[in-house]
Structure formats: C-alpha cells, structure tokens
Image (cartoon, rainbow, N blue to C red; front, side, top):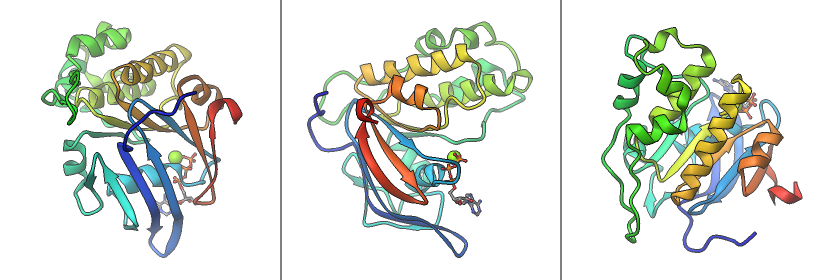
Length: 233
Ligand code: ATP
Ligand code: MG
C-alpha cells in the first residue's frame, strides 16, 4: 500500500467531547488524505458516532486542531462546514417523506466543486448517482416516505453525494441494509475514491470495512487505541 501524498484533507488533533457532564472523547487524533477510505472501528458506545458529530460541529467539544482542506472548521456552523465540501450522513435517516426520491436527491444538489490545485472537478449528476444506485432509479417517482428503512438509508447517502463532497463522513452505512444495498454502498465508496474524494466511515462490520477501506482507527472508550492498515487488522 502506498501512502497518498500531500497535506491531509481532514486533520483532527486533541479532540475532546462531552454529553452533558460526561466526557466521551479523549484526545482523538486522526487524518484523512486525498483518495483515502478510512474506517473508524470499535464496539457499541466506543465513540465512533460522537467523533463524526464532533467533526461536524454538532456537539460541545474542545479541539487542538480541526482542519478541513486548510480551513479551521472548529468555530463554524454545521451548514458552513457542509458548504466547504465535507459531507455527513448521520446514523438516522434524513429524507423528506412527502417528496419523491428524485426530488429528495435534487435537494442535495450543489454546484460543481473544483480541487484547489486544479485537476478534474467533482460533479455528481443525478444520472451518475442513479447509475450507482439502480434501486433508487427504479423508485425515483415514489414518495420517499413509502421506502423501507434500508432504502431511505441509501437515499440519504445518495442525496449527500449530490452535494459533491470532497470528504464524506458516513455513520454505519451498512447497518440495517440488505446485502444488495451494502454492495451498492461499497461501490459508491469506491467510486468516490476513484474521483479522488475521501471517505471516513464508522463501521462495526469488519467485512464491509475491509472491503472498502485503506486504513482503520480502532476506538475504545473514547480513545484511539490502534491504527492500522486494513490488511494488518
Ligand atoms: P454504536 O456502535 O453503538 O453506534 P458508537 O461507537 O457510535 O456506538 P457513540 O454513539 O459515539 O458510540 O457513543 C459514545 C458514548 O457516548 C457512549 O457511552 C454513549 O452512551 C454516549 N452517548 C451517546 N449519545 C449520547 C447522548 N445523546 N447523551 C448522552 N450520552 C450519549
Ligand atoms: Mg454509532
């Protein structure tokens, strides 16, 4: 495995986070480089979701360094962070139940993004996204509220992709979804990577993580215990 070159797209150092008085994350440090897929692994309650939420500015936290593509993002609002090109798919599904699948996808749409150093831009057209998720293509005129939980999960991911993220944070993409959809999720992650974008995913399913990831951080009780290539895990 060759290490991708250049500054990390996402760099986190000394991240601490709390739920009320409970100190949940302790000095988390991690980085995600261009074109890398990185898994955050660990048991229930280890702090995977809390890490992703804290990166997005959704929790009270204190951090030494939180940088996305050279911007300090620790004082930004979640929507401002998303606008810079950091996509986030939370554990719970976020679809507009009254809108069709197609309309849901269009709500995620953002202008094409161009890498600061030039090169090919990121531009997920509706057609490209529907090609990645053929089930959604078949259901594009259905109301999102009539989709199953796994299908809504897939729609949430697909809508976030329409925002052309440079880095995508995915919380448990394989949880509660059928094998065929898991396969589409994996192909979507690899398609992002092929365009030079990166993914940081929280994942308990080691088979899925090993399939798509280059590296992993293992969390235990809110601390990173181990970092490793997938092959060595
Ligand atoms: P899972 O695999 O079950 O999704 P996780 O690794 O994502 O687990 P987190 O959800 O980050 O774990 O939880 C980390 C810790 O924070 C746990 O001890 C959990 O009980 C606590 N926690 C999570 N959400 C809340 C909340 N809303 N209020 C209080 N404590 C919380
Ligand atoms: Mg979680």
